[in-house]
Length: 187
Image 1 (tube, rainbow, N blue to C red):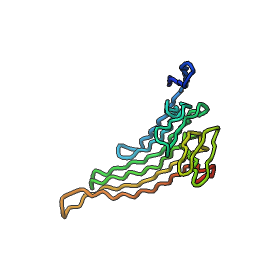
Image 2 (image 1 turned 180 degrees about the vertical axis):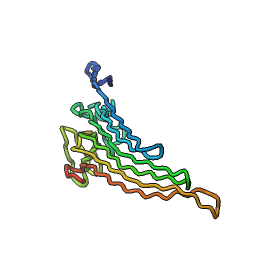
Image 3 (image 1 turned 90 degrees about the vertical axis):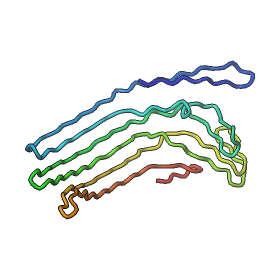
Image 4 (image 1 turned 180 degrees about the horizontal axis):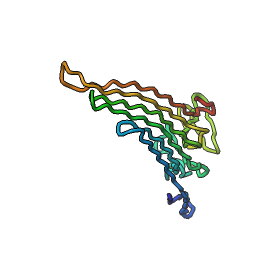
């Protein structure tokens, strides 16, 4: 469970305490199958939630730096997070080699992102907030989906010439996320 409390105050108004709570049911599944003493495969699946921080929720305009205004958003929702992966391990004790291969992915639904509205030459307004030319307003919102895929293969083997173990590794990864500048999406 996650709870955020913060105080909102404005000139000539009473302070207001807002509280927002989220219930999180996290689950984890781990399955390992051993082919032999030297070979196994593991599958895991983890589900959780990333809750918005107080800064991301606070609707009070932070204008301490006039060039970079920031405001939170009470409508920001928690992000659902899924981690899944598959790992294969094999060791050969007779020649002291070790093979490890893994494929994994992280999928985040509704990730919280920091968007920007940039007033390059003209004064702009965003939800009644005035943005002067040459400044920007940064605000929080939920994006569609963030994905991160990762795979690697590593092989450890002895090199008798230098009496050491060498590790050869190959990685592949791909990330996809969204950003929003002046209401134009960049993915």
